[in-house]
Image (cartoon, rainbow, N blue to C red):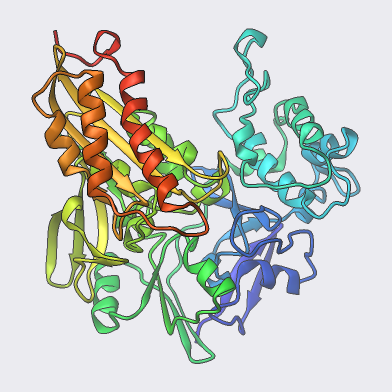
Amino acid sequence: MGSFQITVNGQPRVDDDVPVHLNLLDWLRGLGLTGAKEGCAEGECGACAILVARPDGRGGSRWTSINACLVPALALDGQEVVTSEGLGARPGPCSAGELHPVQREMAGRGGSQCGFCTPGFVCSMTAEYYRPERTPVPASEATPEHGENGFDLHALSGNLCRCTGYRPIKDAAYALGSPEEHDPLLRRQGTAAPPARRTEVRAGGADFVRPASLEELAERYAEQPGATLLAGSTDVGVEVNVRHTRPGTLLAIDRLEELRSLRFAADHVEIGAALTLSEAERSLAGRIPLLAQLFPQFASRLVRNSATLGGNLGTGSPIGDSAPVLLALDASLVLFSTRGERVVPLAEYFTGYRQTVREPGELLRAVRVPLPLAGTTAFYKVAKRRFDDISSISTAFAMQLEGDRVSSIRIGLGGVAATPLRARAAEEVLLGGPWTEEAAREASAAMTAESTPLDDHRASARYRTAMLEQSVLRFFAQHRPSEHPGANR
């Protein structure tokens, strides 16, 4: 029931036999487009990276790199993708037989050796090459992670290589100029991305459904409360690939405009549950500083291009990076179903390990962050790798000072209990008192006493406790009263 339609490297494709759980990577490789490869099947290596035309919010398109190993092929129904093979086979500066500028720099500067990871690097690098905000900067403003050509090296944070040592890849990235005016991929960004297409496919005893509206979604979810909601597929895709789960029904919610808004009200900011983290980061532009600290530490750019706050909170995971931050921000969740809408404080949302207050058929529509914001915030993530890794523990602080006294304080914790939680005892120690090192040490002791960390393969309980204790002292060291810009005097 229903034909799969997609444009690949400029060519329309139609397929009437696409299994519900077949990922886009395997479907593309079935066409003979074998540049993208499976390295980890978890979205951590980037060997499978491709480009997708996504809306830019202004009526045009934005070439966006994603992990093709995670997303079901059917989720791209009606969409437009470009693989590494499509970059060097277009007219203009990348005509047939001629390399794309990104490919040319990678080859010329030794950025490719065994070649396994190269196509993924090329696609991620190409997305950054065409990023509209990328502009050259004076040499004095360049940093080791941001080149003079405006290239943000974090665009490659989700791509791993074991041959070149990364320096030649960095050299290639920083050697790129600006796209030429007649570059077809640049010109493509001036026109709208393909609209969402209602999709309903049944194959192999499973269903893939992309509803046309929020109301239709709510009705389908009410009828099938056991269905799996699919946004960025950064979690579901891992379950399918690694644990071989096969959900009976996938309800795709990633392109529903009712779930993708971001708006500022007088007393809160509302972020749609299906807005990707990259989209939220661009739209917020640092206006919620604590979220601005979170975004660069949340997985990789490849993952953030698909992942959503709704998905991260919907799993109920105790180590999801967004929960501690949103707890510190005193956020609430807007839950929606055929029964109507209700608002639940995030602090009351988690009820047990991967359990929440969501009722059958109820979905997360948006996250609300109350205004005004606290003046002093910080997010600390402890993981084995600096980027693109799951937390061992994470802590988030949002504090307001009146003079040298704490007038409000919220602390969110992740990875230290069966659920993300507020450090209530530590908050009580600090609230209303002076912001001193003695108070910070007392709060640190209270916080470790109210947590229940476990031993696992990421960290021992003892290590987690030590890091938790140090986070309060680190927060004090970075925000002493005399140095605090948000203190009211």
